[in-house]
Structure formats: C-alpha cells, structure tokens
Amino acid sequence: MDHFLYRDGVLHAEDVPVADIAAEVGTPFYVYSTATLLRHFRLFDEALEGMDHLVCYAMKANSNQAVLRTLAEAGAGMDVVSGGEYRRARAAGVPGDRIVFSGVGKTADEIRIALEGGIRQFNVESEPEMILLDFIAREMGVRAPITIRVNPDVDAKTHAKIATGKSENKFGIPIARARDVYRMAAEMPGLEIIGVDVHIGSQLTELAPYELAYQKVAELTEQLRADGHTITRLDLGGGLGIPYERTNADPPLPSDYGALVKRTLGHLGCEIEIEPGRLIAGNAGLMVTQVIYVKSGEGRDFLILDGAMNDLIRPAMYDAYHDIIPVVEPEPGFEPHPYDIVGPVCESGDTFAKQRPMPPLKAGELVAFRSAGAYGAVMSSEYNSRPLIPEVLVKDDQFAVIRPRPTFDEMINRDTIPEWL
Ligand code: LLP
Image (cartoon, rainbow, N blue to C red; front, top):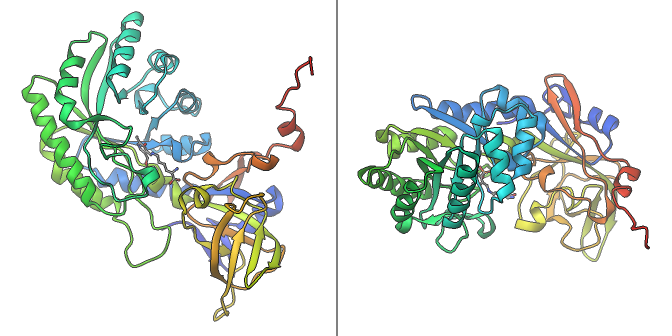
C-alpha cells in the first residue's frame, strides 16, 4: 500500500497534487511519501516484535538525508556499504552504534572512519578483510565488533545481477569454511565476534530461499557456540521483494517474513538485525516525467518522455518493469493504446517499456513511474549532460525539494580544464 492515489481525477502524493510539484520543480523529478516510508519501516519493526531487534535500513536503496532522517527518527538503524554512506548516515544524525557496515571491499580508510566515528558492527566478508580490520583496530587500540557474512549457497530465485547467496557469487565466506574462519577471528585481538551475517539477494518473491538460508544459519550458530564462540546477534540481510507489477502472486508480506524468522531462529535467543532497502523505499517513490512528443514509427507509436535511462536505469539494466500511469486520471472505459515508452538519450537501451497499453496521451501530459523510490535516484547520472534529477519529499500537505536540480552552470563548471591545455 502506498500514498499515491487519484483524488478528483488527479494523482496526489499524500495530500499534494503531483502536478503542483511539477509546476514548481519542473520535470523529471522523484517524489517520496513520508507516510509510505514510515508505514513500511513499521511493518518490519512490528513483524519482529517479541524478539530483540533492529531494522537497519539498507540506505543504498535511497540515501537522501531527508529519507534517512525520517527513518532514523522512527527508530531505524542503517546498513552502509561505503565510507560515503557512513558519512551520509552520520550527517543525517544517525548515531554510530546504529550503523552496520556491509560490503565486500571495505578499504583501510573506510574501516578507520567507521572505527573512529563509532560503529555497531562490521559484517566481514573475507579473510583478507578480517586481517586488515584486526590490524587497524589494534593500531587504534580498539576492538572491532564483527559478524562474518556466510554464503549459504542458496538460490534466491531472483534476477542474476542481484542474487548474492550462491557459491559462485563474490559475497561472504562459504558456509562450509565458516567454522575455520571464526576460529581464526577468535585469535585476533583486534576483533570481537558478536554474530553471524547472511544476505542472499534482492527482490525475493518467495520465502523458501530465506527458510533454507536461515536453517543453515541456525545450525551454524549452534556449532559456533559449541566451538566456544559467543554469538548474540544475527544479521539476516534484506531482499524482500515488492509487487512492481500488479498480479495475483504478490510477494510475501513483512509479517510472513517475521514469522519465518521467529520459526527458524527464535529459539537461539539472539538479537535480530535485518537490512531491508527496497521494501521500505520502493513503493514510497514516483518518478514524474512529461511527454515531449508522441511519435509515429513503423507500425508503432513512441511516447518520448523528458525522463530517461540516466534518471531511472532499472529497465535498461535489469529489464525491470515499472507501472507507468498518467497524472490525470484517464476516463473510465478508455481504449488503451500500445506505446513504446522511451527517453531522449541516444541509445536504444533508453527504453522503459515496449508496446505498453496506455490511455491515449498527448505532448505536455505528465506520467508517473510507480515503485521508483528504491534504486532510482541513487543510480541516476548526468549521462548525455542531463542535470541530475531532483528529489522531493512530501509529508501530508507539505512538500520540499530535498535535492535540487543542478543548474547547467553548476553541472558544467564541475569540470576543470588543465592550464596546459
Ligand atoms: N543488505 C545487503 C548486504 C545488500 O547487498 C542489499 C542489496 C540489501 C541489504 C538490501 O536489499 P533490498 O532489501 O533492497 O532488496 N540496484 C538493484 C538492487 C541491488 C541490491 C543490492 N544489495 C535494483 O535496482 O534492483
């Protein structure tokens, strides 16, 4: 459920007509709903009720500081994967002890920043990372709290580019080797083992892969305890999918997921951390663009929008489906017309949808891409020298620009021409 609904024939973001934002900000832009962000965070929080837990929002999905502040004020922690994300979370007011650091390639500088600024835990992904972390922590005279990310070799049944839990993926330590690696970690004075971490992929639409992975984590936890390690925290990753396309087979709900966590891991008495990104931010955002031209091609019509693959790369990169709806509600009983929906960027990959049935549309009309709040703005670029797309946050009847569109001068003046040229 989200808070983008037609009212009096016009699409609203909470209580704000989307067209009002377009008039003030210009198109294209992203708009996020505070109520939807909070609703989705709370669904997870409530799903884990009864277990000691922290929902660490995977901020890679949408890292605007206004979004982070909204969630942090509701009690969220953050999952970060770079020094930049760590700094951004801190700048948004998130305390270090609510930040977990994931990622396969943490650099020495990133490790230092987090140890200096405070960190809840590092999710360690390899032996060389463990050695570096131990070295830096000892150099600083501290002990780094760690979990070790294990790769359970489970097929998450999702798009190949976002599956992470199979043995051929670069993530985590093979679960079969985990006990040896924990033994190694226990001998390193700069490290403090606190738990186990697992994340098997993104946009999961079934619970079965989680069940398999969490059973393996439960078994491992018992073995590690028998080996003498203190395991008090389990980080279970993120990945629960959202319904991009309205079908009868919607992905499971956070409450179903919470019940699964309790069933598979509840008996261990560990503190539970989860790292959802997409399910919190995805349906909390729209990308709004304008039709520039309606062009007739050879046997097909194109809707050419002012939003492009540089603004929303998911369709080009993952063949992702996004619902595209007109901002002015179509008349009931309209005759749908198939369009290829494209942006102005000079490559054929700049196609959002092919032969998508839409109400008839004209130049100047606004359309909104649904489920664009996660992995939308964060993956945008200035390809084709198109200034970075702005972001807007709505709360009830208020809206604010939370990242302005750079002016052409700001964009161009970021380059410097060497004096010898
Ligand atoms: N934790 C870890 C360690 C992750 O790598 C990820 C996502 C998450 C949590 C959050 O997963 P989520 O709940 O958002 O599914 N750009 C792609 C998605 C990449 C996901 C990468 N890792 C897309 O647009 O679909």
